[in-house]
Picture 1 (cartoon, rainbow, N blue to C red):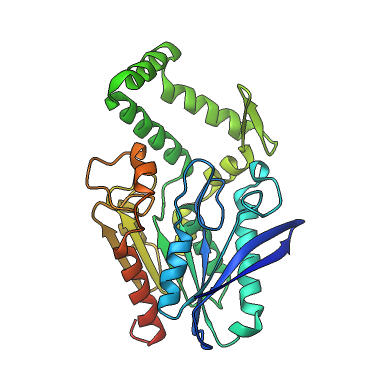
Picture 2: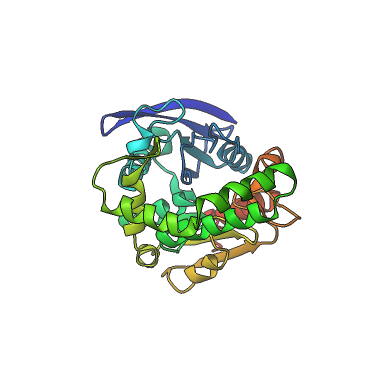
Length: 313
């Protein structure tokens, strides 16, 4: 595998990324990797947790002779810009700019182009695929069809459930303060309403800076309508223990996408793309991140792309 650091200019910012190429001259396919939500670098790492998702996927793709491009989101890693003021619209534009760069690269002139998105990245992939007829297919990992307002509430409910079962002094202390602070779901709904009524890119709530623009844009999106515009071959992979994206949304895509669709919901797979044999919990993510990305994911992605290249799909 050969890796080259690359950069592009877009919308006043410099976006840094990595082009991963298999050994040898021929590159029949190149995949643009689009990260999920949050301040993530090209490998989907953040200050909070090191997931190393896209570098793992890029390495496995190279083993099968498939090139890929991954990049730091604006304001993250080595890319310039202000992540806290970045909306979903800018993230779509950045991905589109990377796609254009890939397609103009002389070494990729005879290459088929695919998109691979994780979480929010799956939604961005679908938006690009719907507007770009040169895309040969898309891979949607942990796709979400839910409206984002509902996602926010559901994830808050998950967090409260996890706190209710947290053992030891920490769990007891958290539950004590939650009781003192009142109905958390009602307070969150009030916060979301305040964000929707705001007009600036960011707002401060108790000294915490919140990306209001991104939240407003995510809530305004019509997920089902976006996926219904998809007319390219699609691979959708969800995890049975995904707490961020509903596993059932993979099946929902079968009623929306107007193209050949291969769908999988992998037992025990979590949103961080590792298997968790225990009760699903976001509290396990740091421990799970130390494990390799689930081999089932690599196998399915590699086989699907090779089948597409051989015209078997």
